[in-house]
Image 1 (spheres, rainbow, N blue to C red):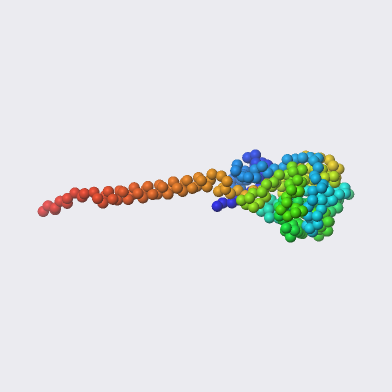
Image 2 (cartoon, rainbow, N blue to C red; image 1 turned 30 degrees about the horizontal axis):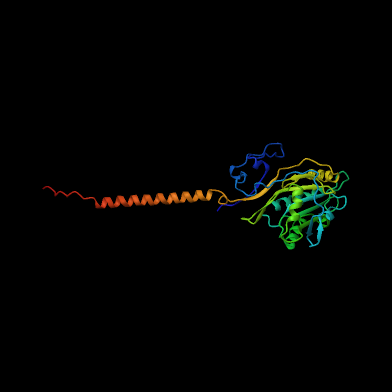
Length: 304
């Protein structure tokens, strides 16, 4: 059985491929057909997974969770003050996309943390990050390890701020995903559980919130431009909505034997091939019997 983990961009969903510019302004070389990003099959259960942008919508401040320490908190308590927030949705056992997104986020934090124009943009100082775990059964142990992994990627001078300003949240009651879905729906973030794979299908988006909990911008992708991040944080602080940036990605496993007609097609081919072999062998056997039972003409004696 062939299985591939694919990241599908908005271009791939439309059946086209993006052309990436290189540093010299030249277009990147054409992509090898073998590396082409394929769209999900029509039967894939996560095809409805996307983001419906809801600028200036309000997140439910009374939604209750447990943080990485096990303390029960409301979203409003975390958003208190005048600090804008970057909201993400991830989970620890995600096979690819969550790792790529959070790696990209932790990688850009040092760049936006540099002082420019007499302004600092540091997590735990000028903004905070809230990561909501999509898996309602997630244990605090896994949640804590996931948080440690990404904070540990930061330079030492940023870790203390991140410890204070990057909160990971899990369901208040294990197995009850109502609060998770409530917050996700308020910002237009859809996701679904793929039972056959025991995984969540979801997009990747950074959702910027003002200090009042209103959505000001969506930034898509797994790599983030420092200037875009700075601008997004600034606009969130000013409660100023801005156009989305980047291309939306989502993660899925493509199994050509699952939920489509390929298995039936392969089975039919195998049955047909087996039938052809049986007919061929039967025909050869019949010819052998006929030749064996055919009367032979009498042999003539040699003339002297």
